[in-house]
Length: 346
Ligand SMILES: Cc1ncc(C[n+]2csc(CCOP(=O)(O)OP(=O)(O)O)c2C)c(N)n1
Image 1 (cartoon, helix red, strand yellow):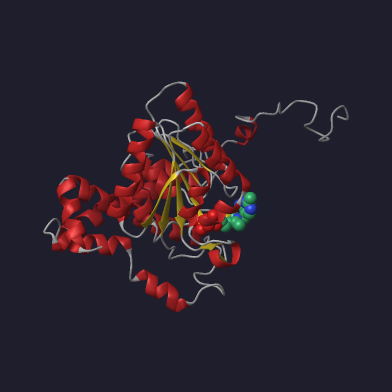
Image 2 (cartoon, rainbow, N blue to C red):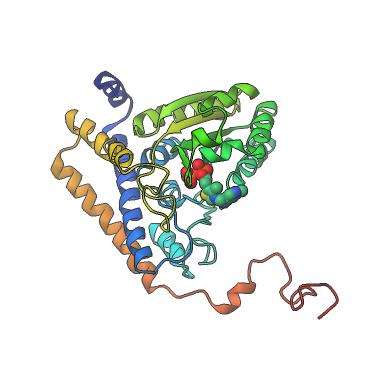
């Protein structure tokens, strides 16, 4: 980003808001680093997809929302939850599979859910939540409520049918939803060029007459600006948008995958790390006299403390009770399907 552009942002956002954006990204980074350590120590089981490298997208986007707006996201959801206002302790406890977790320890890393914070999941099926977000936006419009919905997904999700059906319906019915494609270039080990006939995700909006924008997803202010415009469009005119945020994940697809594997080179990962969104934003703030090294270190110590306390809380929390297996399920646990799996053969 050019310095003139930063100066323009600086005049639009208060010092407090700028520092808050950095704080959000740093909190996400330190939380994920602790989660990685806990995974290595086998305190966290199952799948665990980290967000390290992509923090500018969630921080820039979610900071444009009000508390009662909604977000839905994929399984790479820890930082989205934190930034929408979920308690870090309860997020970590969910990763640990403990009763105090956001989903009572029964959802795990991929299924964070926090209705009071406006987080409607954490979804493990690629793109499965795109029509759900569209439905939430429909409900908002139908009930004439002033909220908006942000729906985050990876670039691999734009080739599923439901993405296209959702954009079509959102445009036709004028729904207040912003689809945010976090284009980190790879769906697991498959590069976008190998999976997609066109690489320019935002172009797809043209097919449905939906407003769109491509933005540097490593630049928190650029994301904040673009999503801010889309949120205004949704709130004032009840119109959808598609934002493509081009970003990069610094870790493997999930904790059980290697950092680069065979699909990208070590050199590519190292080059991309030079674009670290946190370091870059700090350097700009520092150049503008908003924050110095000592201030950064103080902020860093405070977010490390939050992550540390989240781990301590999770570790001290109880496992879910065995009976909890039968709570919050749709099927009757004592019904005809329970024992044999087939009706009438108990
Ligand atoms: C419908 C479906 N197909 C396949 C999978 C297996 N899968 C899990 S993550 C993933 C890649 C998704 O990549 P992308 O949407 O770009 O998101 P990213 O992981 O890069 O954040 C795949 C294929 C799945 N979860 N759901």
